[in-house]
Length: 123
Image (cartoon, one colour):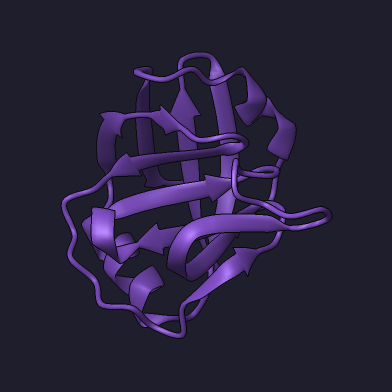
């Protein structure tokens, strides 16, 4: 069974699919989340009330991937380069657990501003 989530920020709504990982399972079991968005280049991240250890972490991620950043207990959405990305890559601040991917329009997140409220729930 595919596990899908709905991500809402104001009028923006996107769907994501969770992978089969320990991090994805913890996120699924913890839903829903309501938080305040932080932006960092073309990444948004927000704190969630889960503590998950690093699991096959990586710094270079793919467009549309969802990551969990253990040092900040943060849910991350990567939709383009970050301030430390090199040419042709998307780079997280440090290693993240990749646990899912966006399955709808990625570019809608370019409209999201710092401080906006975000909600992630089961679709």
